[in-house]
Length: 116
Image (cartoon, rainbow, N blue to C red):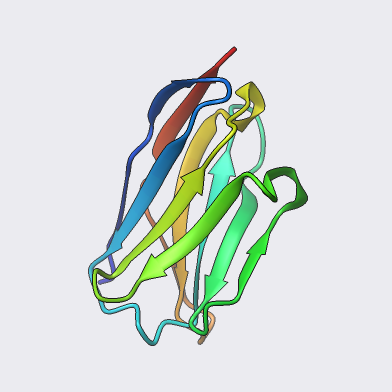
């Protein structure tokens, strides 16, 4: 059973930064892709950033230039560096792993609150 554990959430003022981590219980070096999603209260979960096994990254427009996704295969960890945070970034952030066969796994989430 694959487990993903997010950490690094918290309360930050607008304009501040946070770095989220997602530690996987398996080696991620050959994983098809991993990504970060978020869900604000009353809203659907949305994709915000992804990274393939080859290191190709994608972002939703609302976070481009502010968020950076990266992976450390040696640590089996994916990171999300979030800069210039805005109140509208407040959400629970989830890590997702796709194994390339149609199976995906989710972490339990990390709450990020950005105060104005």
